[in-house]
Amino acid sequence: MMAWRSGFLALVSFALVVSCRPGAPKVVVSDVPLTFHSRVPLAVGQKIQQDTYWGHQAQTLIDSVAAVIESPRFREVVLAQRGLQVRPGGYEIEPRVLLAAYLGSEPNGRHMVDSMLHLGKLARKVPGATTIVSSNTRTVGVICIQPYVLRQWASGSVQMQACAVNTMAHELTHTVVEHEQSAALFTDTGARAFLYRVFRGSDDLVSYGLGTLAECVYLEQVGGLTRDAFPSCLTARSLSSFVGCDHPIAADGLVELIEASGC
Image 1: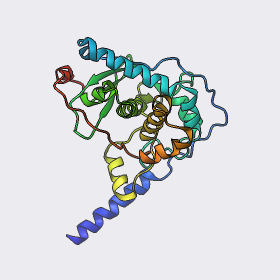
Image 2: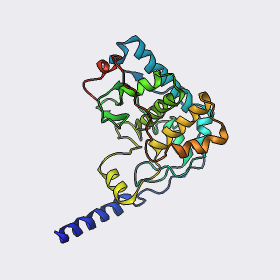
Image 3: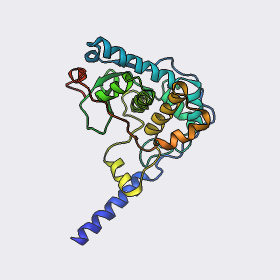
Image 4: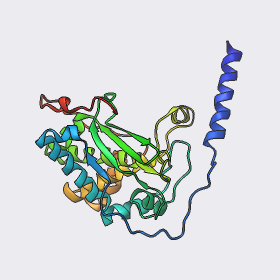
């Protein structure tokens, strides 16, 4: 039994060394143009649109997230943030390259794919999940969020709204692909990610990092957070995991808008 366990651990350790070593060098590009698309390519799913109120809330959430991530302040804080990795155990991406990929300034390069927003039945602690779907003609994203994320946004509480912004900015990172017909560039789940976290600990990741940066920028824009307090906001949240917020529960008909398939 002990010999089997030792052999298993040795195999896992070897796999981690192979998969987590810098297979790709640290990406450094001296001059990436900082001109961006003017919209977030995300539409509200038809099922949410069936309800006028919640359809409006979903659209205003998307619009508010777009206003945050396309703002000069967001670009400023991302450019100042070092050490974000594309996936657990992956390579560190240079901030200008990250911005270009996230905000779509590379002609025919890394970009967000057109995506649809749905409500989904997910594990309780997971606010959202994103899937990339490719066909012979196009690649699209499907973003599924918990009903409570929309309740956070509709609550009127700036703190809870900031959590919803975090979730959406995070999920949008998973819609960035290298090119058409390819998988998500920025990930934080899967067997390799699980093994890496168990054996090597947590890294600051693009997905969690951009979500948290967007949350804190939103709190600056709307909630009165000062620039001096911005580092404290990042510390209170996390760049390596999602620090959850309250999960509002209400008999408001949202569960009836959950997408039965695809989430």
